[in-house]
Image (cartoon, rainbow, N blue to C red; front, top):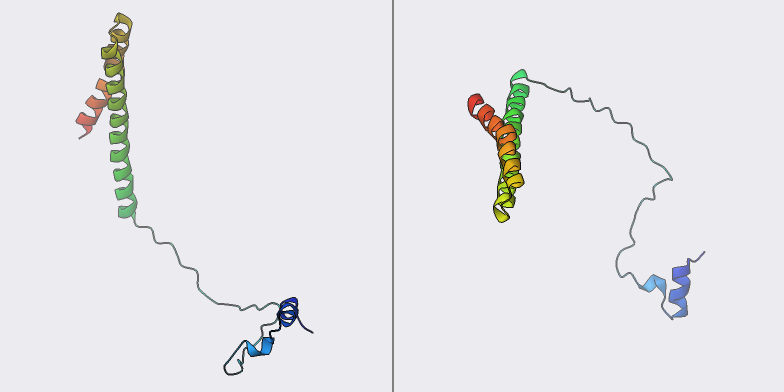
Length: 113
């Protein structure tokens, strides 16, 4: 039984048997489904207390620095906003932000080391 591609080739005057010039390939055909049972042992997770403590310390330092960086960026933006158009309310907002948010974070960061 010829496939549709073979029929199209024959309509064009091409013999599908002449398309391959070489030895007859001996390829085994696979059945519909093939299952193989593998006995691979599952790896056991290894947890070292020192590794966990190191990661925790690194994340604590990163979080403290990130919080300080965000507070500093906010202060820079607010100071720029206040300098662009000086207004007593803007100056009060910047001073309050610096006193309530920025300086306590900087103080805690410097005290912590």
